Each structure stands twice: as C-alpha cells, then as structure tokens.
Length: 147
Image (tube, rainbow, N blue to C red; front, side):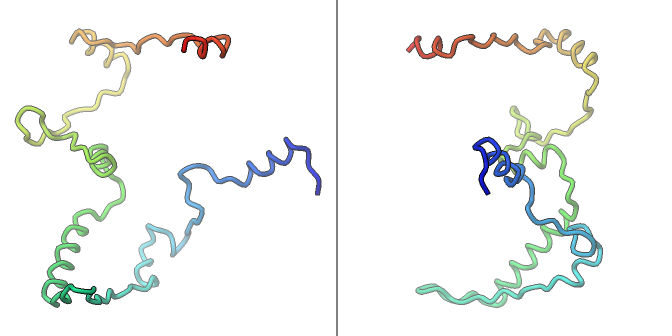
C-alpha cells in the first residue's frame, strides 16, 4: 500500500492509545469489582530464598509481616479514595495536617457555587478572579530576538 504522508500519519495516529488508558480491559467475572473474581483468580504463595550472606527469614517473622499487611489492607477495601487520600498517595503530601500545631484537620464543607466562593474571597480580601492572560506573540521570531 502506498499512502500520502498525511494519510500515513493519520493511520499511525489512530493506532496510538490515549494517554493513561489501560490497554487490556476485563469485564464480567474477570472485572476488577466482580464479587466472584477471588474464586477464580489463582493465588500465589511466596517462597523466600535466602540471598547470599543474609540469613533466611524465620517463619514467625513472615507470619507477622503477613498479619500486618492484611490488617492494613482490610481497612482500605474500597477503590474510591477521597481527595486528601489521593494527595497523600500521589504526592506524599498530607493536606489534612495543620501547619501550626501538626494536628489533624477535618473538612467541614466544600463550597462549589462560584458566586458563593467569590463573595467569601472578596470578604477575606483575597483575589477572586484569575490574573489576566498576556496575549500571545504574533511573530514567533519576536520571542527569540529578546535573547
């Protein structure tokens, strides 16, 4: 097949997956939230082999570690994380920690209507509008002439 350059690029671009999209999707009983999934997915047993120069771990330490892991996982059985949990997981920032005393803060309310948000910010003397955007340069060479 012979393509024009633009047609070839269009065909190639159609094959590129969208960013942050899984290439394999499971549905039905293999889906991630299926209730019967644990019944058909095999579990693996972890075998510990001692590394060079390191003693083999004792069975008690492995059992204790397994108990700690199951205790941690049992509390986090859901997949919908709050905004604060996502910030902590992704950026390692605890947004609910007070800057002054180090205590735990809690979210009292979330203000969504823009009119209410604007009134609150104006009352506090904070800017309620985004700063104006500077217009784009008409000639790209103008940007490089400054250097």
